[in-house]
Length: 169
Image (cartoon, rainbow, N blue to C red; front, top):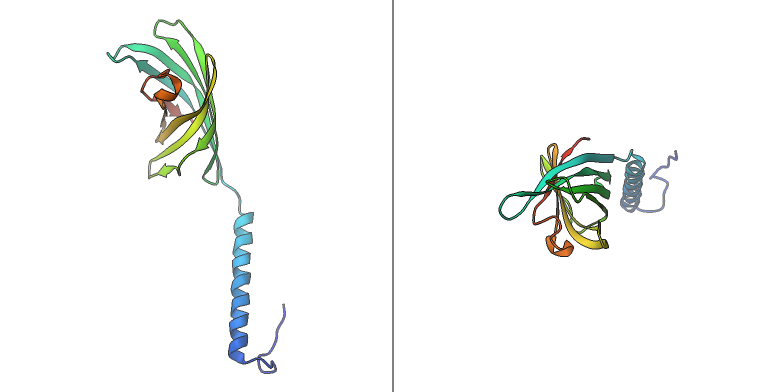
C-alpha cells in the first residue's frame, strides 16, 4: 500500500483528487469484475419423463408417447436439451423412437414465478433420417413439462399437440 501527501504535489489538489477518484473507481470495478468471475457458477440439470397420449381429430387415442429428457443450464444459460420419445400405437404395435437434440434458442426464455418457456429449434430423428431446424417450445411449470414441435416441419408426426411429462429433478 502506498501513501502520499497532496501538500507536496505540484498538481492542483482538485485535479489530483479527481484523478485519484477515477483510478479508485476503476480499481473497484476491476475488483468487482474479478470477484464476479471467480464466483461459483450455477449449474442446473433438470430431468424428467414423458407419459402422454396423442389423439386424432375425433379424440380417439392413436399413440402413446413415453421417454425421458434432460435440460442443462449454466448460470441461467440453456446449454443442452436432449430427449428420447418412444411411440407406439394404442394397441401396442408400431413401436419406434425419436431422438431430440441440438437445441438452438431463438429468443430469450420467458420466466415468471412458477414457469419457464423456452423457444428454439431442434434436430429430431425420424424414420427417413433426421429433420433439423424444427421449431420447438419447451414449457416447464411446477413439476410438469410439455414439449411442442411445429407439425408442419415434421409432417404432422406428433399431431398438433404437445407431448406431456413430469420433472423428476
